[in-house]
Image 1 (cartoon, helix red, strand yellow):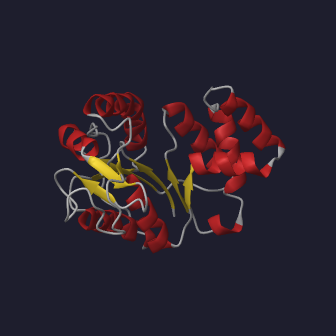
Image 2 (cartoon, helix red, strand yellow; image 1 turned 60 degrees about the horizontal axis):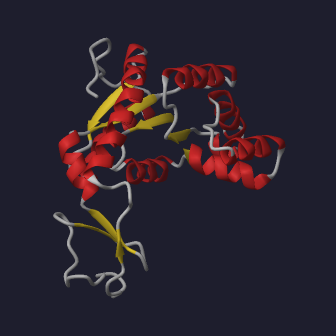
Length: 233
């Protein structure tokens, strides 16, 4: 199966991507990871990407797609793959569709984690981690058993927060996500590829709902989709 996973910052996309990859035996392809690997390889494409990144510019869509095309030729992608963080706009979606078609492949599903922005702001802005072992916590949902002490490694006074996890900055990131994502969702829904899953549920229930969609596809059946109606964003 070839799958695209779509979701805003803090929706649990990373966790669900790993679970999907593990369950279906397909690699999780993150463009960020691929950029780093390509740069480290030192080949011509890697050098080109390095120059662009170091200049502070965004890597053009055509280069990103070229990198993905090279990556999916590797043996571990023979049975499919999961794209995490790509495409980000309709131009990239169209480029991906063309590249897959030329490779004799096709996209099977675009899974969107549907979330409530207000709840997501609370979820993200309350996050903090242990600087020593990276154990995650939350001001409301997962406090350490002993104040200022990590449950996992026992470190004291070593908690940290991401600088962009303030409510104000989270709202900006969500606005950017919605501006970019709305056209992509409509694009994929018009092609009867979009499946929306409630991302505000318990993590295991989200995984269960995603699996229900993907198991249907893996069995060769067509999932029931609301083709043509406006997707929730």
